[in-house]
Image 1: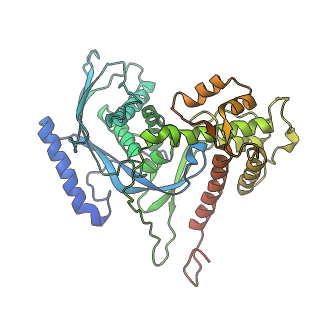
Image 2 (image 1 turned 30 degrees about the vertical axis):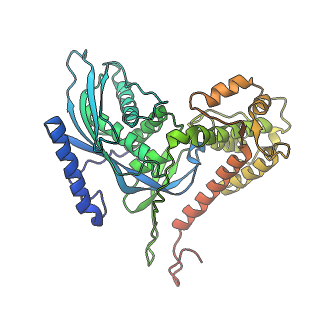
Image 3 (image 1 turned 90 degrees about the horizontal axis):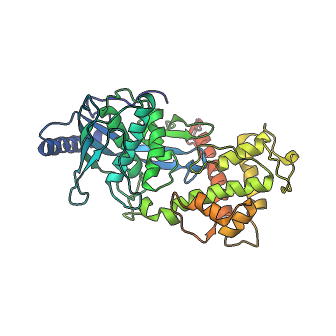
Length: 426
């Protein structure tokens, strides 16, 4: 968790043996193009892989545990840097070039010494992801040096994670970008946890209210292992070795060639789900007389925070709740049983037969005792969301049931195979 991002002198340990020849050719091509474009070799190449999620879909932004793993497909960023002027008065100049210039146009950006890169989240520009990582990195550096000004950089990007293919090309790009900027500006020791935390926040600047699974998988994953990532009470990741059985456990990643660009579909898909999960937590807390403490959920509170509040006895002083504090859960309840109880509460609170198609903006605002305009400003403005009704029961039920499935699968991976059959499942 706290170890630094590793630095490699060779790519031999980065890819499966079967891929090494093609990857060497790819890296050589990137270096050759860099030299041709900038009349010098790159000083280093930052790399961040894509990921596949084994189990734990759409629950990371509710702060529940997930089990992804990194894949060989990755984003590479070749860089050469020029030191910042001693007087710190000149803009940093950053040309950004893609290995596929016909599809991804080159551009040059000037960054004021005390400023940051400008990002228009409404424009789907590929360089926004680099700029998001750039801003996260310089914000991190300014925490220890408020007068920090970024250096100029030559940047050449090559990525083979399919865009819109569900393998987190955007997170890989943001993580690699942040890592490249940190390294170019003299940060040779980059702790993995700090890189992940700044990348999670940074990627939201492109207009997607993301959780933290993708960035965690890209940075924390260990070769040959699954990765357990939890977000409550704080970010934590650990490698989960796959059981040794014969034949070995194999995961197949199939390319359907159907794309779903998260940035384009976010207002009625991804961002909407984040809002629905958050509103489900707010509505259930209101019904239970609970006060939700702020947490690291994208919108400030989460279903995981709701579970914690219910089983820690943190009732509010609200007089309009029909549930007294004596109805709160026993703090000693096993985690698995807590999740089962939360599913029961979803059914009793959100499965309202008078709302078979979900809740309107006005109905939720009325329940939460806020003006509709306040609700819409808080939940539907910073990250665009388009819907007439919110499917709260459906989203909350998925989160708690998927969290149970993650728990069961993790227990399976950590169990011993049947000595007679060599099987995990008996």
